[in-house]
Length: 343
Ligand SMILES: *Cc1c(COP(=O)(O)O)cnc(C)c1O
Image 1 (spheres, protein in one colour):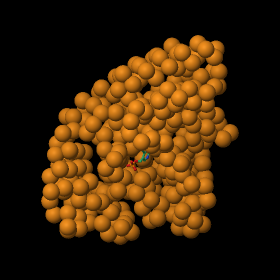
Image 2 (cartoon, protein in one colour):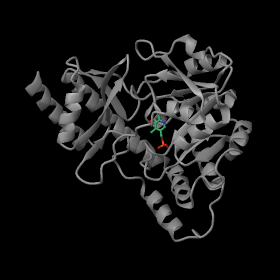
Image 3 (cartoon, protein in one colour):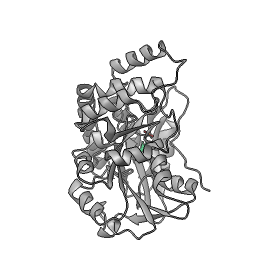
């Protein structure tokens, strides 16, 4: 099988990482203190197998009826694995839009399942056919905001698409904290709409590995049967629980990063890029010269890592994560120099 290739993770040092959509800012202090506290606690004991403290805190922060609406995972990637394990049997099929998050395909391959892609239409819109599922399609994934585009399918459209599906629709909301809308309300109305979230992006905790699923309690109860018994460790549960109590911090960091995103998008447009309007913490851009690989390599030589992405039969471009204002300034300056030299 083809392996999934995660974004490059160079040894910590001088490299400016704008390639995997991490938060450039450190997590809230309360989270670091919770980690320190947990590390001096009873780590000779197994953790709470279902992360009850976290699920209570998350239900509270998100305005959900209770912890029974939440399943905790070792990163939202583990939640995606559980979903495929639970819903897509060998020889059955999962559906994903294209271009989007490549990992879904790998998860199907691991399961011995098939996958099929439905191409986005112009303007990153989904055709109605995305909601028309044949019997062998057992699960549909939709990253929203999407990666690499950063675009959003409005919740009303998602509700419409899910209503014609004969299987669950997983809305992967890894970037929803940066967006204007999300699908949490839809989960309470429809048993076949499931939402995944992560603490890796908006909360600045990619190194901790924590994500979760929001779904109706009977769905959560079924999926809990197939999880590893102690899938989240004591230290990450403590960190994630504390993070849920930091909603003011989150609002501030999101406002700051979204302001940087606007600046990045405007200045890329000034440099001649076609910039897709983003509601995530990254920007997808394409230059008329088509020399994205050259730009990627030039930036890398200058210790700035961005993501060069190439989608067969579709095209390529650069996905640039929102860093600090200083990091973005350096990246833009280098791109400007490169374009001057190679125009
Ligand atoms: C980053 C990302 C994830 C993975 O999140 P983790 O919680 O770090 O595993 C899931 N889905 C999408 C679309 C992502 O971009």
